[in-house]
Amino acid sequence: MTLTVREALLAFRRAPLLSALSITTIAFALFVVGLFGLVALNLRRALMGVEERVEIVVYLMRGTPVEVATMAISDIQAFPEVAEVRYVTEDEALERARRELVEFQGLLGDLQVNPLPASLEISLKPGFRDTEHVRQVAERLQGFRFAEDIRYGRDWLEKLDRLRDIAGIVGLAIGAAFAVASIIIIGTTIRMGVLHRSREIAIMRLVGATDGFIRRPFLLEGALKGAAGGALAVALNYAAYVTVDRLVFDSVFYEPPQALLIVLFGTALGFAASAVSVRRHLKRI
Amino acid sequence: MIRFTNVFKAYSRNVLALRDVSFHIAKGEFVFLTGHSGAGKSTALKLIYAEEFPTSGEVRVSGYVTSQLKRSEIPRLRRRLGIVFQDFRLLEDRTAEENVAFALEVTGARRSTIGPKVMRVLAQVGLAAKALAYPRELSGGEQQRVAIARALVNDPLVLLADEPTGNLDERAARGVFQLLRDINASGTAVIMATHNLELVRQTPYRVIELQEGAVVYDSAVDEPGKGAVLP
Ligand SMILES: Nc1ncnc2c1ncn2[C@@H]1O[C@H](COP(=O)(O)OP(=O)(O)OP(=O)(O)O)[C@@H](O)[C@H]1O
Ligand SMILES: [Mg+2]
Image (cartoon, rainbow over all chains, first blue to last red; front, side, top):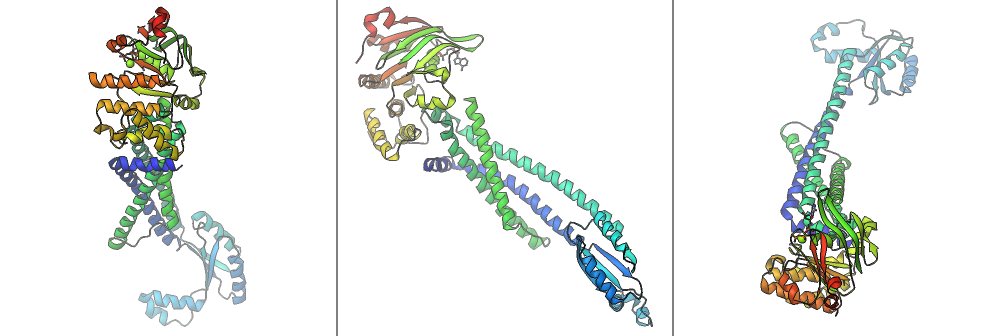
């Protein structure tokens, strides 16, 4: 075991340039993947911001007693899709209209009777903020006798649905393409390292090294290169994030577990690429 | 100890490297393998260290039939053989000492035993003073001595040498050859493939000559008096 570690570390010391080159290559491959992930992360956050505005408004019939409304609220709150129900009284509605519709201030100010109905504003939990679910909830709400009208910007919701689908598909495709590209690049890089040492491998076999003995330092070396490349990629991603966040727009970075995932992805790729390369190489000799 | 029985080796349909080769080499023997270029000398050695396997016939090395060995058993066989080549095959980025130690590390030898053993064989080949030199800092003859030290460090049954003097000048070649004789004198069998007929003629050792893959002369069989030189 210590011999494996020593041999793997020696490999870095013996070919520092090649090692540095492969770590940088791996880092850039993973950087691109990570960058894509960041873009996806921030787009999703933006989309969530929009989604939060998905809301169903139930206008209550004039004269609906407050007790009835209150009971209905607790019923509605029990819907699995519902996050929150807000009761907006007639007075509050007028108040809000006065505040928000400044152009009609004069008109609204002169009113003797409040023409605005009370309403329930219902927001949904994440995952239910699409046309299908909104429609289901709205249908159920229709069953309340005091519900005069139910509103939920259908067109707008459908657009949001489409946006979400497109973002999902495009993201998956590009993400997969980048991931595959990085796998190929990392595989090639590691393979170069193995070929670089094919003479050494031949000599090892000649003096009676088992395949396992030959393989182990390579696996460790590959994993270390992958981990180092992954860590470097995260650092580069962070630099990119800081730059964008400061100069362009407010954005978010990976949570620590997500960043760790990139490093682990690199480690696993480096390990797997080494395993495949060495196995293929040993098979041929 | 090494027995070839009706060995044929074809690399492809039209390249027959060995034809019906049979011989037996005993413990402690010194044997020259001679023949023109392409006669099959290297092939015969490869069959011994299980780099290649006979197309038909049987190669037995220290009790193992090579073609019956599993891949995982071949390293075990190789650790009982010492192998030396014309081009030395040293690891360029390791010192003489490290090159020799490597052959021991591979066997999982304990660290404490490696150092003394390495120094002992380096002294045996006359290179104790150059233990810390890298191959590029050594002459061809010295590099070949390091390779021989590496071959010896596992106390092999037999030393296989494929043109060990091929890249060396007259003097260095003589030195390396003398070293092989000394090694043989201390009990290790040596099989040396060579073009150098002068060396062969000057010494009393057994000669097996190949021609186009066939044994055309074996002094142990054809001139029994000569091949019987044992230490
Ligand atoms: N790996 C191989 N694939 C195909 N043919 C081979 C291979 N190795 C050797 N041969 C052929 O087998 C024959 C014997 O080769 P071998 O290397 O055993 O000869 P040799 O006696 O060692 O020659 P030399 O003195 O030049 O080293 C030659 O015709 C050679 O071309
Ligand atoms: Mg040859």
